[in-house]
Length: 61
Image (cartoon, rainbow, N blue to C red; front, side, top):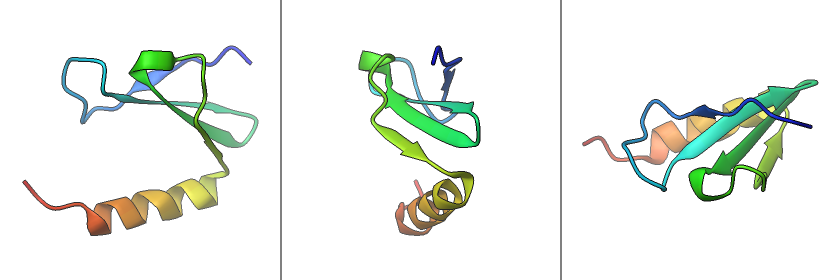
């Protein structure tokens, strides 16, 4: 797999960013410091559930 990573739109400049890529019905997440080391793979339904929980739990700034 040679993913085409997209940086989170919520990321400011620096090394602490989340990147996302997709392939064959799987969503891949990694961090800026290691774009070759996928840290999470998820199916779309599981990823949607993760995002819903994160949005619910994250404080508004």
